[in-house]
Structure formats: structure tokens, C-alpha cells
Image 1 (spheres, rainbow, N blue to C red):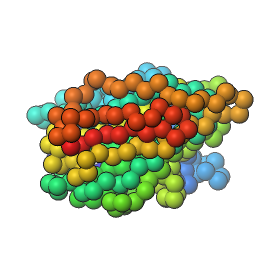
Image 2: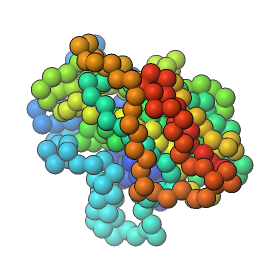
Image 3: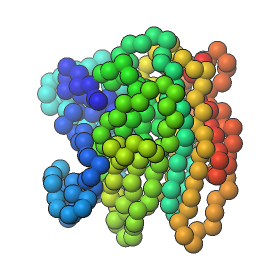
Amino acid sequence: MLEVDRNGLVLTPYGQLPASEVIEVSANQIVGLADGRLVSKDMKTGEIVADHGAVSAEALSEDPRVRAKRLCQDYLKENGLTVDRLDTLYPGYYTWAAATRVDRFSTTWVVPDLPTDQVNRTFFIWNGADGGSLQPVLQWGNGTLAYQIANWAYVGGYFHGTYVPVAPGDVLTGIVKFVAGSGDKWTFKESFDGYPAADLTVVRPNDVSSVCQCFEAYTPDPTQWPANEYTAMSKINLVRREGAFPQSNFQWTISTTTTPPATKSGKTTVIVSESAVNGEIDFYFH
């Protein structure tokens, strides 16, 4: 579920966007490029079920968060609207590492406790690839005081799969899986293990070159974050495609572009293990 505000904007894992820029895709469809246009196809028949319009080379190569901010600013200007602040900067944690010839990248975490202060503020917890161009996302808030999961992708446009409710204590495994690829067509499937209704399959113009973990909060108040001291992004696992040398460790880089509030524990992002087989990164909330 995405809440549309009074200006026609929705909050996504890429920041705020005009609602018209965000497209839902069902698990039995595949979305991607066809002759310079973004289309959704029936996965079984290959027939086009929706044409989402032309897409430029610039849009395909642009950072999805940078593009989201620009689309919002253009939309507001065109419609004579103003807002106090676009929610494109947030207090949160982001780590990334190089990874090539990815066959399967997965991370397991537990849906955390409810926030102490249960209000309609939003945060996302996710693992993914290429800066979040592919990301299985756990969401709190955004129009409902509950947790939900959805898979998100940016391929020159912003797409998400079906939202599925989950509850504190549920174990989630977010997966980015290589399906096929060569030249300028690379197909990946995003999923949560055991939640097939949320699957999202996309065709991208390029292969994956990095992986990431993120806690993305749109409120600086830790009482509106999970009540747990931290969430463990665990069992981080990378399988490379046939013929690629197995990767034993990641070299994680902790982003400094966002500044999380001080926590009671004094900890923020803790890299517990750099293992590419059974790694762990902990995000501290308190």
C-alpha cells in the first residue's frame, strides 16, 4: 500500500514521486524494454498487457533517487504546488559492495517489533542490487500502521510488485535472482522466500555490478523506528554464475551521505561478518 498525499505524491524507497510515475506489476507479468518503450508482458504468453511509454537512454542510466527528486520538482512546478520539504534525504543506514556475475543474492532478517510511537510515519528495510535498482523491501507505515513487503525495481521507470502483509517475528529472505542475460537485455527476478504473490521480474539493459543493505527512515525520531535495539541483516549470501570464481568475502562500504541520530548504544551500522556465504550487518535503532 502506498499513501497518496494531498499533492498527488507517494513515498517510495527511492524518495517521493508523483503517483502517476509508480506502476504496480503482478507476479505473472514481466516488465522491461521493448523497442525503446517500457512494457509489461504476460509471462506465459509473452503478450504485451500494458505500454508504459517511451524511455530515454538518459532515464535508463540516471540514478533512481536523483531522477525521483527531479520528477517531483518538475511535477510541483507544473502544477503550481509547493511543499515544505521533499522527502529525499533521510536518516538511515546504507552499505554496498561490488559484486559481478551475480546468480543469486539473498539476505535474511526478522520483521522487527512495532515502533514505540505507532504513528503514520514510514521506514523501509531492504537488501538489493545496484544501489537499490532492484530491491526486496519491508515497509512500515505509508498509509497503514502495519508491516508489508513488496519488491521494487527501477528500469527507467518505477515499478513494484503486489504488497503482502507481514507481522513482527516473521522471517524474511529477500532474493535477487539472475534469470538470463546478454547484450542489453538482462532479466532478474526479485522475491521474498515463501511469498510468491509479491514476485517481480524485470528486464534491464545491463548486468548487476553491486549489492547493498539499507535501513531507510523517513522520520528522525527513533521512537518511530522499530522498538528493537537492532535488526540483523543476516545469512547474507552471494552465488555467482557458472564459471565464475566463488567470492568468499565482501568489501562493504558504509555510506556517509546520511546522518543517523545518536543511538543509546552508540552504534549505527555494524559489519558483523563480511562473509559472502553467511555474512551479517546489524542496523542499530537505539
